[in-house]
Amino acid sequence: MLQKSNPLAVFLTLLAIFFSPSLFASTGENIDLTSHFIGYAAVFCFTIAYVVVMLEDLLHMRKSKPVLVAAGIIWAMIGYYYMQHGMPHQAEAAFRHNLLEYAELFFFLLVAMTYINAMEERQLFDALRAWMVNKGFTLRLIFWLTGILAFFISPIADNLTTALLMCAIVMKVGGSNTKFIALACINIVVAANAGGAFSPFGDITTLMVWQKGMVNFGEFFALFLPSAVNFLVPAFIMSFFISNEVAKGDGEVIVTKRGGLRIVGLFLVTIALAVLGHSFLGMPPVLGMMSGLGLLQFFAFFLRRTHKSYYANAIHSNKDELEHERLRGLGDGAPFDIFNKVAKAEWDTLLFFYGVVICVGGLGFIGYLGLVSEAMYTNWDTTSANVTIGVLSAVVDNIPVMFAVLSMEPDMSHGQWLLVTLTAGVGGSLLSIGSAAGVALMGQARGIYTFGAHLKWTPVIALGYAASIMVHLWVNKAMF
Image 1: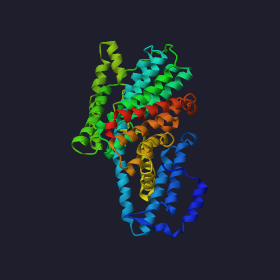
Image 2: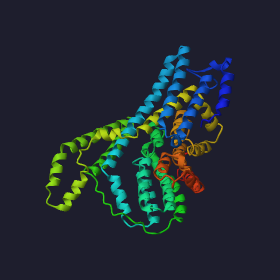
Image 3: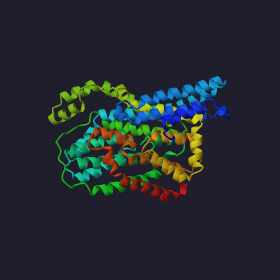
Image 4: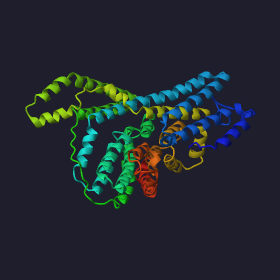
């Protein structure tokens, strides 16, 4: 999308154009600032901020900080310019529009993260991990099981949480077998990203496309087969390099805490409320999600009110085995606190998302997204442009890439919107830094799953990427 500029070149260009008489060209209500000092400064500011984001692991600085500052600077420059030209309300209205788009996505993601945190606290994910570790499966079977589970869990949960859960399993059973752990982590990243591409709930990019109304809820499932091909092609090839030795478990048994399965049920109800409210009532999906958060709060109230009686019954149980299980289900004896789950949401990601949306919205208001849209979706073939978007998302986070495409609103068929949804979702698998799942697993399996280890298998992953695109163009050709 936006090219990363050389700092010196940008600085000299800024000096050259600062006093240009053509700076004040206006197009409609918005002033075209793409050749203005402010426009170049905004691109420079965003580029610097994003370079800092990409160096997160090296600098140990959370990725939200630079984009939050960049967003403030970009819109301050826009606001100042429009104020000087007697048009402050245009800039204010544009900012409020971007803020509203973010607010809908923010509350949607906050509810989803709260539910995932509640399931994690109830030890549902830990119980699944312990079950798989102790089953005595072969390493190759665990390679396939973790990949398949990542593919099918990520459409409901998010691909980051799913990848971390599956990585914990392979780290547990892999032990000192670093080759198995590295290959399994690559497989998990590809599977989680592929699974997230065919569901509005699987990735932030698919959620943005759904909330924007470009693709209806049911139409996402047309991407199931292409997504499956994206996962299966590299997994099939990599599986030949996994040994068939039996994995050894540690015998750990984990019992889910009280109410865990009911929280899963409430999460499914919440998803249904969001989908039905959007499909039949025309309301934003966030309305159903926030209603579902209310249901979770009522359930949390029930757990707190019945906590003491449940604990007393467990203590006085006559059956030792049952007592043991129920006491373990209570954990540390503390009642369920819903606001703890809200507090443990991934706030860095949510604030990073704000910074990106506001930054890209500012660049769009300046006029750059119009130029990019003209270059890619008018001068290029639409399919080639959408495939390029996916490759670009392997280097630049897919959130700003997809938000930029949605802000451009190119005139595309449903098939093309599904294509860019697919490519932006799975294109990040080409490199370990291309998705949140990959970055997180590099930290979890530090020194084993690395950028270089993933890069060795990029040609195989690219084969799956190309195959998924061809399958989509073939299977869903009626949508083009």
